[in-house]
Image: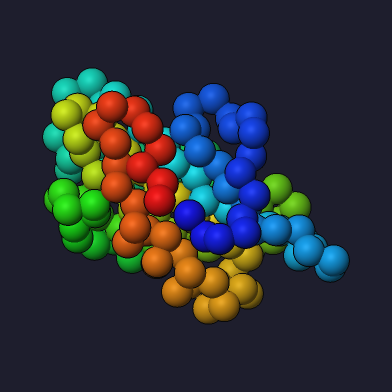
Length: 144
């Protein structure tokens, strides 16, 4: 995970790890974050799991718009990457970038969320975090 980012000591239910960019002297209105989850998918195929994920995201996130979806290797396993836009709790424009893979019936997800206006500034850092992420079949965070 990015050096200097703060580990949230009580992540939400279902999250294995939540890290946020440091607040700094002049914190941004929305602090970028990375969230790692691992959830059993009940025997779904990768394709069906991801189709269901898109349906859930569209219902759960205001103004959700899928921008890009691609198949790629995640932690040396078949997986995918999703790029999407949605509105945050105060109506701010947010960009969601998500890397996903399925390991032994468990869907592993690394989700980055950042204010859209800062995406270019943080995209390389987020991609580096994703490249170093190794989903743990035993339920660990996979963070390095």
